[in-house]
Length: 346
Image 1: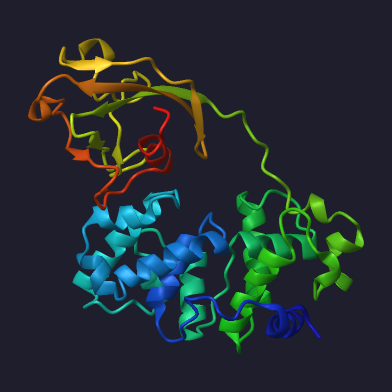
Image 2: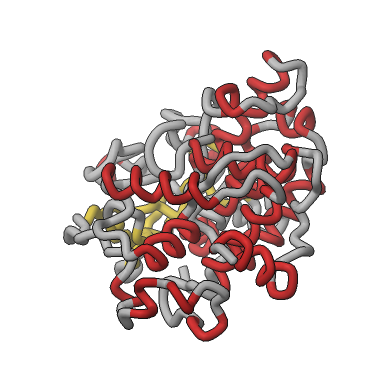
């Protein structure tokens, strides 16, 4: 019995068969789930997915939605470009494909946020089309089973893994196999503490036989992340509403609503020395670190309040709103900003 058959047999008994997006024949929910699952685990994704689908049960609903609402429902999942690309892609499909989700892989690859593995997974799982996939879980299973040298992100290593994925993808039961090998990587052949005795292919897995499971796949040589600093202004009015500005579409937290920045590390919204006289500031908080994929962001928060009624006169360089934490609007907020806003210590 080859690797594919053994994984399929294992999956019938041990795989995940009740995920909310496992709807055969409809690429839309599979697409939503695949985008959410990029860089994010299933357990985290499920509640976000369920809220998202309740709000946007059909692709046309997503295409017609305001981006603010899409980002609001995404808040906390991170990697917000995924949400912006979902909205953009839904709009493109609605306008240029008559609202029908493309069923050819070449068409999918033209859409924002959909790469080769994601496109293959969508079409394999929803329509049973034969396409190999190579997400993080599949890379790990194949790299260990075949003892593939090199970091999977390197071009030659990834090329070899694609060849092996193609070789092992069956002509029949493609949807089941695609889910099975992803489940195997997620639940047994895990990044740390893999459960090798429970693996259906452990008897000829090269890394297991050599007792080098933790060596594969090879890790990327990590560079020390740079550190950027900023200061946020937590400005309240007499109604205890908080002043938020909308960030530009590009860059960190693109299009999300944020506290005004007083930093020179990024494009400043307002300089600390140029705050209007009617804004009274307090002492800054201690430094908090938030880590992105490419750098650390160290920030402090300066609490502030308006003296008198000047709501309409506050910094007007960017779109802005007064936000009521007790009756919040449906705005996209980055997780650190949401935490600051609802903290009782600032």
